Length: 247
Image (cartoon, rainbow, N blue to C red):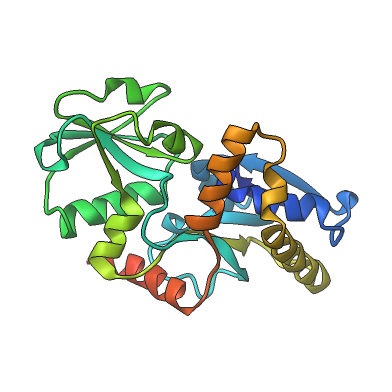
């Protein structure tokens, strides 16, 4: 039984939809676990899952030898909406930023942007459940995932980290990609990739469980903010990410 770990956010629903409903995979072949990004990193590093939608921040350099198995992942060009800094004051006035406990890659991206774009030295502190309630005065917060879509307009200032990355590099940002922790049967890998492709082609079907209001919000998000095909520009952006990590 092949263990698959995927991020438990709206942006991953097309992949989940493809894995479960495309018909390319049989339910008796795999176990699917949906977990937060930091746990995907944990599962990859500790080989607790066989196939992982692994956050880019799991690595310190481009993982050419780490068994990337598909050309699909989670990326964005300019605004992503689901990785944001929120605050009541401009970022240049902040003294502290509370970090989303679900995050791995976004924290590293924030550190890069603070150093190379905003050129600020800000205290970064780990958040716990409900940390966004502490955003006030000179304290901001990094919020990721579905919660970010909810809080997008709830604060006076909101900074989209993907858009800021684009302003710094003029490149897309790759948040996660599919990788394996052990050798997987080639036939399964080929069918797995077909399932992902099918899911992307039917991505709006994955949203039918939501109310019309949320459906419209999430459909706009999937259509206009998320890139699923990791092509040359996305790879270039990913390599730039690792270059900045090592500066």
